[in-house]
Length: 421
Image (cartoon, rainbow, N blue to C red; front, side, top):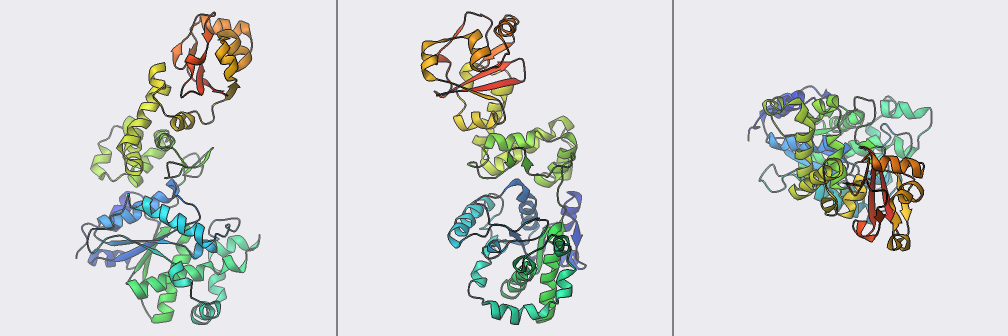
């Protein structure tokens, strides 16, 4: 079977190619090849930081090759020193198995596991390490790689000053053996990953050469950094996950829609499946919306995407109180993440609270009653997206959203989420 198009050329124009071992491109252009990427199983969800590697496997499959995702059930119990300042927490088998099942479900949204000879597969390195004794490992594998070779790797050098455990030091041997095992048992000829994995990947090709006289190949993708220097995939609230329980579809959509103009020029090449011509035809002011739409639908589905767009329009556009009431609680809380909160008792609300007192004393949206009156009379206050100008207005139970919340707004951008208890 000949590749459908050049996988390497696809990565190049998408700015997804960092390092490549000589001979790799010729191999991939000559026939169908099986290749793999490893994923960290220490969480029950993949994050947007994993999307570069997921997209790499997706393009690999679309080019006619067979993608394999290795979930590191064994290495997840050890930890990887690459770019890390500390060891990972070690996980037990039950937690790891749960995490692996969750990650597989997410990978199935990108990779085709039922398309013939180049169907995607998932493997777990715990399956071949669980019965591999320590003595057997150091005898059969460790003897082939010198300490000098291992010490020369950047991932090790960076940690020597602060110290690293033998567990972490041995990680590159464990990952290298993964490559050897997959090369020998499944005919896998190429390992891919982020550029911080280059040393570990090359250790695998070296083991294949030294243990069996075989040949294997490698390539890496660049580590993505945002234009402002912050780490891609993280926000002030933490990681952006693919699991809707960890990161709501609304927050996921907002992550992409809020990409800077400079970042989105790079992101749309990496995370969209559109061709170069299709991307170049998108007006620059529409790039964020088009990327957010495509990736949100792929991860969360059409319905979740439409709900995220509608919530955005209602909360930050011209939505009414009636429309605001249609937003589910998780989306509302996600949209209001980081917004100041205030609490009011249900008993007070049932009795009714004067709008001036509500704004100035109960939720402190205005510093005084005088300021509250001025802002009301100036048409600068909204309750649940509806303008309020009458200083005699009473806030009561009828103002509740989802039976629990009131959204107060001063001007265009200053919000307060009132939680009624």
